[in-house]
Figure 1 (tube, rainbow, N blue to C red):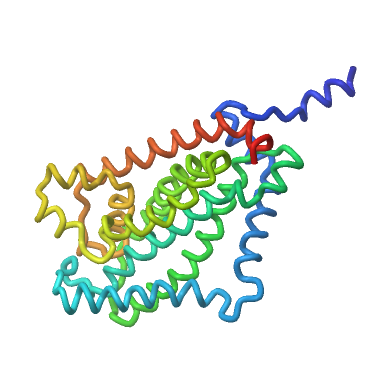
Figure 2: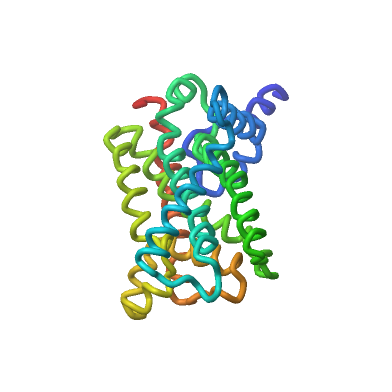
Length: 283
């Protein structure tokens, strides 16, 4: 009887309720660490430049956008902020979002052999894949730190709020990532949707320009519609925390972005939890 009770305590039930996802992540945290570290090692193993790629990409994009939008198009910066700093303060969260979304969306299909052999909380795989993008984000942040030191543009107390906006970026990426990775298991065509989302999202997100410019052109009502893009709130939050008094938040649009990101995250958890029980059968 004691052995039977012990077996019941470690019984794993697929497709458990939403409230149990966080308990499962904690219970299997060692597996989460192992899979996350594996993805990091695979990303940087046998690369010529290694982590330097995480620095070169945002720096090169920043230079191009600064020349095209700041010098040629003559778009204004936020206050007296150097245009390059304003661009990079938005480019870092955008690249983190796009990389995390891409990794999470392909994570289940990429681990088909592991999923078909043994059961464990499937949420670990897409959640662990986001860690790789977060490591890239931390490495690339050194470029922004050096750039701010070069221009002698120092952050204020608002920098303390930056972790909250990083968490918001994770939520914004993981929510749709969970939905798409679950759909990709059954319908492989969904993997072609991610490059389109990333490319289209870059143009409709205030990365190369200030969202103040968009609000002045569109007006308050249309800007609320524009704020249905969750990355509008994330980028505005990053700029608010990094640029100090030179940047401000328009709270109605910011709250719309937060609510949509939270809604997609909850929907992603619900849909992923509902469909994970069939992954091993159809993958």
